[in-house]
Length: 137
Image (cartoon, rainbow, N blue to C red; front, side, top):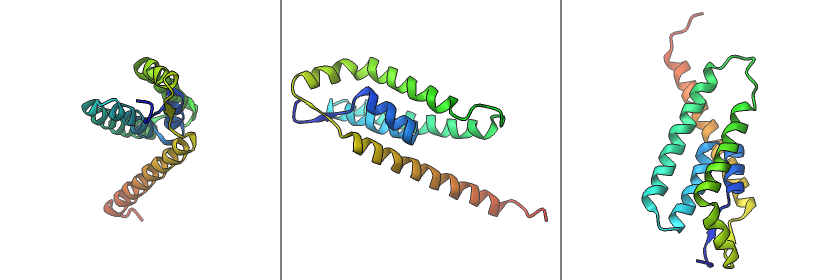
């Protein structure tokens, strides 16, 4: 297994913080794929999509006084702990056997790419709704 790369819980947490739960789940699913757990990889991506959509919906109904970083910090810590619980031991064994971690730069870049994609989808959705709603002027 030393020829393959895995992503650490810290890298998955960084992906969550920079790019959304979907970005974190994308890297987490890479670990599942490397470990041959293809169904878990697919489920991870589905739940990442559902979780991200739910967080976006929730963010539209939160009061303005709600602390802006509370939700991202919360799910970032949650992803780190969950990834540590699920793959932490496997990643540690992989590293001790001479395996490699994925690039931190790749985690940052891909996560920001996921964020840009999410923002583009939101922009198109909001613009589409504005086009469909009747003009009140």
